[in-house]
Image 1: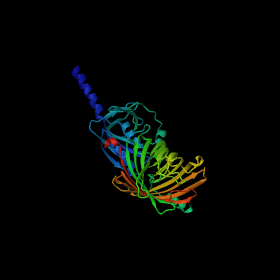
Image 2: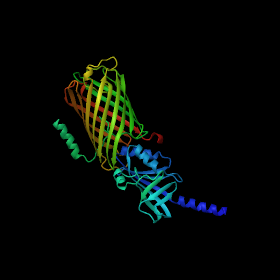
Image 3: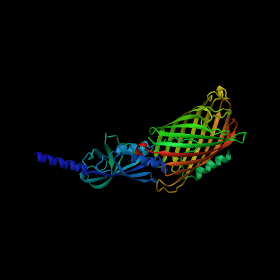
Image 4: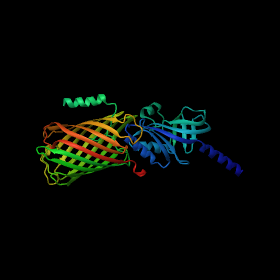
Length: 161
Length: 270
């Protein structure tokens, strides 16, 4: 019995870890110049789970990859952009899904995070998918007002594909 | 005056690229949290009436306390009449009150407070807390960034005190003045951003004015400048300020200004 339980626990934990955040792409708003872009770049680089950042100064966007087995914190990424004096206009996480079924209320667990899909209820997700976070501070104010999602709690994010 | 407004209008029309790191004024934006900046400001004032030049060397440090609050501290060294003296220092606080960001756009409003101490002699009616007067200044700044153009305007109330034992030549009624500034900036280089090592070139044009209601006197200066940004971290500003109109007595009717600046972003990462 113990062996079965252990196997079951291993399977469950494996299935959770299999849903992996591969990269995050952030478009920042409120800036044009390379010095401003550099201040965001340096702020993001200061996070311990960030590995590499590919900055596109022209579009004020940053493609971020992470250290293996690190705890990726979306809120900390957002806070660094805001701390540099700017805002997040778009936040897209590329997540590797392995045959995961989005239940009828749209929620999926990704490690310590819960995603609440507004457009994927009852769908099976498989492979790398770009997931846009649509909570307050992760989209432009204009976009946020359009979606009008209420905060769902700590490490729970409203998302669309 | 007509000519100045023509130049400003021209900047607005031509400008599809600009910046807001103004040379003679501060924008409503703050520096990044936990960032540290160092400045070496060099002011060359041509003394009115005499042929001599007053040189002011103003080392300045800056720190971003939070996304909304930043602080500057500066020391004034004067190189007049073959002497080099420390004449005082200043503190400047800026608080970002309102922020509306969009992609490559923003509108921001900030409040600022400046306090300066100075021990130099005062002959002029103009109040200048940047190396000439002791006193306080409280103001508001609004800045609009539109792609690579930027426009900014500031209004402040400046109050002069005696420079230690050197008495203010103004009566208590006339030691208060209003400063009003208008700034426009345009990024001319690079046309396309590729990496952080590209040198940026910005052109600025500013109008700086003061009105003293107690004396019912004023001045209006025009201040064009060019700015180079190196490796997205260092900065060199070269500016020229020239009096357009004035009834207030002043130290100088023209100034050449050179600033060197270096920024360390996100101190923890260094």
